[in-house]
Image (cartoon, rainbow, N blue to C red; front, top):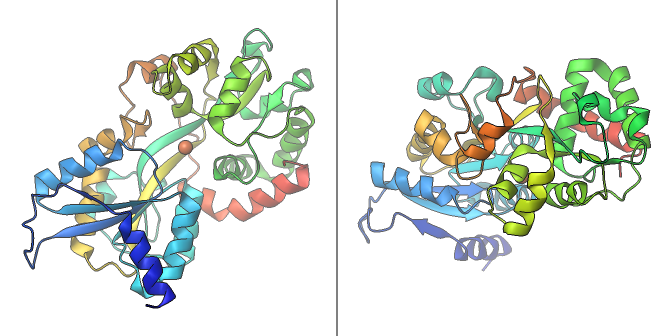
Length: 342
Ligand SMILES: [Fe+2]
């Protein structure tokens, strides 16, 4: 067997078939759609299952982190079995499109359901759920009323109190890209310089460890995706995390940096029709809410309905498009490196 074949085989050993029994076993023309997903949330399976029940189309799900999924797709090339690719963060899906892993298509339904700022102008990918980069603060260490925006984290009064996740994570890259679009390069550089000067702790490997450290008083303030705090508060990772998250003050900048999970049709999709049908389903109000609800994200339109999200209040997106985040990703990484962001 060729290396390519071995990789494809091992990939499919991990396949999870959903909605089995709906498509007749052994039926030659059983309809199915194969999803490569960088979303590592078990709860997504519920929405795929519902799609299968409603349409009779079987969903085969392959999960991997965003980067390894993209690497796998590049390796597989034209022998890839992927029909639909789902990734978190606008920069990741843009890079997948740039690498030629997606194919453009137009769907009146998707154009209607997905606001234009949340989709690719060339129709290669469409946003499915929304997430915000928020500021988590420890009220006993910082004056929370003095922190309103990401720019405020450069205030010298926060010296030694700011904690950040490592530069290699795409969430902060997209935040920096967002600020580049809104404020321009000079202002973004000076924000980064001031904020990095306020960092004394080693850079964090994840948003959850950072949120915990802020609550424990190791840090005064940090930047995290909103749903991590909401999940902790919802008890998803146990009572200890819940207690820690309950102590945090969550500041949603107004306007806020909004990002998405997004999906597109794979370049070599065999089940193109089914793939489009799945994407249309996920982008619909019910589909988007169904995908966003269990992970404490927000749907494409409106807001999440959980108690935890309601406590955060509503938000106003800053209007930067997902395509702009992707287009400024490389520049953002460069500026972060030059500013000393580890
Ligand atoms: Fe995440």
